Image (spheres, rainbow, N blue to C red):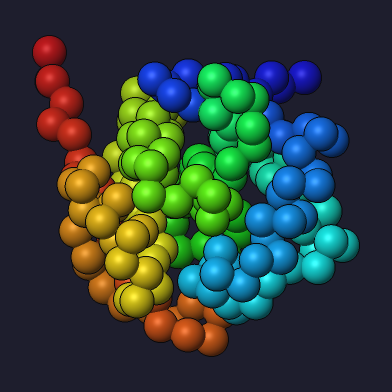
Length: 175
């Protein structure tokens, strides 16, 4: 059976979701400020939060990469989800990030997205990497552009406009 890798950054632990994350995840996804730029922009019910966690687990099993639960290393507190995502029908291989409101403004999204991007490039050998971001989501745009992503095009995404930010391809040695 495939084992979900653990990534460690200076302040964060990116790990597999488990049952203990559900209450904090459901609370995070019920916050309209957190969900306003995600899919249809609506908060998730507890049932839909559970289904989403199950989908993330299944994504790992089917694709052998996916979204990690993010926790603060110092406290063990669950603060969000960040990782690599490409379900069927998605615009491409995405680095996606969502944090609970209590974790905003601390640089956690950048720290974990950077680790996910490095994992995608170095472990998964991915070169065509993007983030799907709503035009008004300035904090997410800042994370993507700080990591080198450039807006490439607009798409219709869950019935509303979204922009694709593409990360630069690494120059690979031909030796």
